[in-house]
Image 1 (cartoon, rainbow, N blue to C red):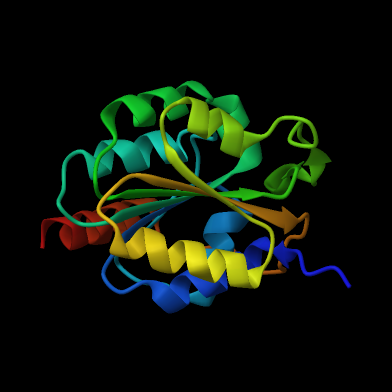
Image 2 (image 1 turned 180 degrees about the vertical axis):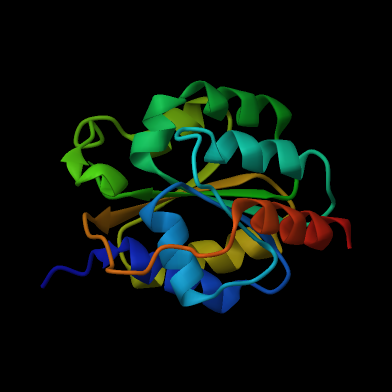
Length: 187
């Protein structure tokens, strides 16, 4: 029996653990699925800028004391691998990078990425980052529990099935997403 989670399952599990953490969500389906599961002011839904979710999360973590979680995809991380080196250099104590590795560009039709032979967890480790690779629900829950308690940068590479939940588009205007998120950051 295949115990591999779908991205929506990973996001649902994450949201069981989240309290007041700030979340940056990757463009397309990840943001739509997060919005569908639990819309909140502390969620920043990226509506563009593929490849920059981890960079935006890092920048935010360097400028706030709140815990910051970036939900990124393997395709986006592959597009901007340099961000792992920058994260490894700065290592804010309040940053979690959750890479949903479904070996697909989910938002553009599930075309295959290169994570069938490129191991993002090993790349992150080589950048000096505390990294946990998960392949099932128990491992993910254990990783989230640990990462949310610790005061260090953690990269979680969660293996997933390529699957897009049928969700509605986010109807919140981008400017409203921005201002409500800014208000949650500031206080």
